Image (spheres, rainbow, N blue to C red):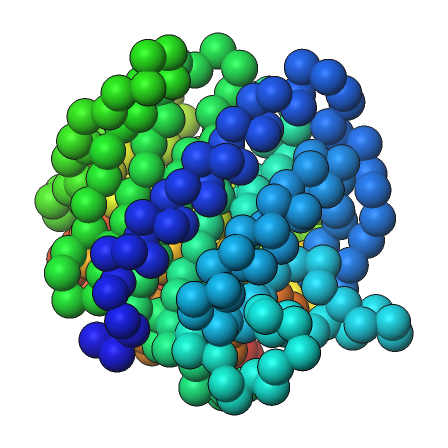
Amino acid sequence: MSLKNPQSIIDRLIDFQKTVRDTLILSRSKQALHEVSHDTAADTIYKIDTEVEPILEDFCREWSKTTPLVLIAEGLEDEHGNEIAKVFPEGIPQEQAELRLIVDPIDGTRGIMYDKRPAWALAGVAPNKGPDTRLRDIEVAVMSELPTSKMGYADVLWAIKGNGAHGRRDDLRVGTHEPLPLAPSKADTIKHGFAIVSNFFPGTKTLASELMEYIAGQLVGPADVSKATVFDDQYISSGGQLYELIVGHDRFNCDLRPALYELTNQPAGLCVHPYDLASWLIAEEAGVLLTDGFGRPLDGPLDCTTSLTWAGFANATLKTQIQPLINEFFRSRGLVR
């Protein structure tokens, strides 16, 4: 651990994400948050996203009074539209910063802006190793649930590298909270459980479904359409997907869109970027096994535009069963990664 006072970092990030949560709750009663604001190199920016951008910069400005930092977040661009990392306090060289903060203030915008499903505020902090700093360098992470209007509770999770993962459930009505148990599933089969290949948008649906059918067929047997033996849950939030693994709801989850685009000779499309996985450390510290989707450790540069594939397994038995099947599926179609 090379970050100074990691617990104080966690406390700051929890407070920041609470402000995001409170702002979201207040804002949705005043305007249509599903309207498009603009597009960036990483994703479409909706009105809901613009509500929290000033909060993030004010937070970094205040923190930098005692700790110089580099912020990596969606929407930080130069005059030519190129992604930039922003230094706080403004004007100092990047190498003088102590840490790098990668943030997705609202991961799961499409679900929460229609008040359909919770989103998540994500943050990871790594010691500043310059532009070569990577996801694997993150030593502190926090993620907070952004609730729908009918929810009375919201979860908050955090981790310090090497110290396990922790969580609490906030009561939004009275402001109290209680401990939240974090326990990935110990099941040794996907049968009668949730196992998911991300299949959010048109363009990769056919192959993603074929992969899921292949995994289920190999592990459960020929499909019996009179029974539901494996369940699907397309949660359009990488943070949300990690949460479902962390608390034991899902047994397997993966998002392989870049590989699916490549397999179908399509240009790089909308997919997961490093800031979407800013909270990966919480999952690993909780016991979830993460790979790059093809068996290597999950990693990537600390930015908002690099295309990533990933897979998460609730336990080692499931990883041993499923990871070779993913590799075999792609290898049989001529793609080796």
